[in-house]
Length: 144
Image (cartoon, rainbow, N blue to C red):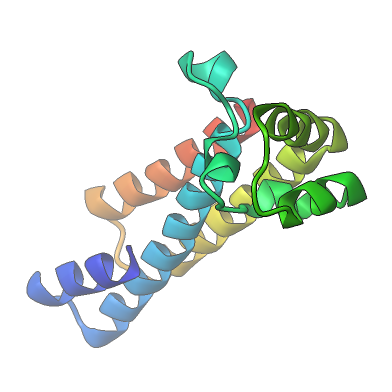
C-alpha cells in the first residue's frame, strides 16, 4: 500500500516530500487494514456466515492471537496440526481476552498516524477523501 501511494504521488507530479508523506499514509493505512482483516477472521461466523479461524486453520497467526496472552492459546498455536475443536477453542479464548479490542486500538493508532502523515499536504478533495477513508476504517474497527 505504501509503494502504491508513493508511486501514485510521483506519477501524479507531486513533490518528493508529498510522495514520502503519502507513502507513510499508505504504510499506516495498509497495516490498519490488515489488522482489521485479521480481527474479522475471529468474527467471521457472525459477520460473514463462514467459519471463523481460517487464518489459524491455515497456519497464519495474526495480531489478535498474539495479543491475547493466553497460555493455552500459545500451546495450541505451537501444535503442528490442530483439530477443528482446538481451532474453535483458540477463537473463543481470543474473543474472551479482550484481544479484539486491543487490536481495534492498534487500528485506531495506525489510522491516526496515517491521517497525521497527510497533515502537511495541501488541503483538497483527495486529502479529505484519504483522511475519511482512514477514519472510516478506524470506525469499522471499533464496531467489531
